[in-house]
Image 1 (cartoon, rainbow, N blue to C red):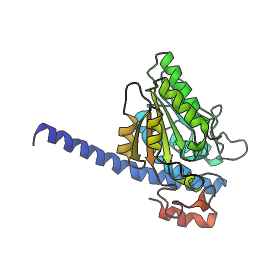
Image 2 (image 1 turned 180 degrees about the vertical axis):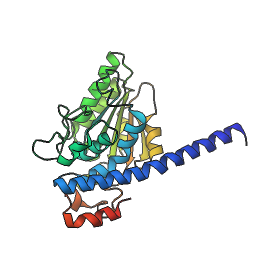
Image 3 (image 1 turned 135 degrees about the horizontal axis):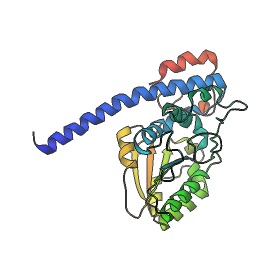
Image 4 (image 1 turned 60 degrees about the horizontal axis):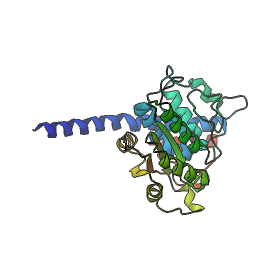
Length: 278
């Protein structure tokens, strides 16, 4: 076997190993999300499930954020612009040791630091208070510009929803980022097609390219494709990653179901839901 073939085999084996770890972990986190949402009567579960693979790859393999580096001025930054998917972010932060697991028991309850939308003044590791759609991505663009001005190595990542892309601030920020050549900025569009009921917006890859971005389309549930896209660097251009996802991914009862958009499970539904999680 030649050197190139050996390298290819090693990469394939490493990829299989990562996936062997990735999917069982994600299934466990999904079950935990369902259990927390059931106990606390709160949570946009399907919205969280559609981005959970992306969140995990970011925090496990790309961002390099730990409890010790939360205030590092050179740190990479992540903003969940579609803030209603907060329960997914909280679960990943807790799994990474950034957020104390005990806080999950009070998700969405009065006096809890964990609201239905993330609050940067309360939650460790949250870079921006989001939830009003279209606001998080402009903040990400501002952070990316600030890093450029200060000559910091930080990269900035933001997840926006496809329905959120109906907001004009998304495209104002896209135009601004391309003009400023913010090649340290990554916009991940969670294209779970939940916004199609209101507006078929067309090809987001073509739209971002028209605004001067480098844009690619990936399977938003494949950790290898996610990692490759979010480690791509295109000099002088921000990167848009159009992630094809399934709303409610991994729970057959919830997948692509409008009924479950913001519905928390009843106690008697819990066992059946957990049984279908993969």
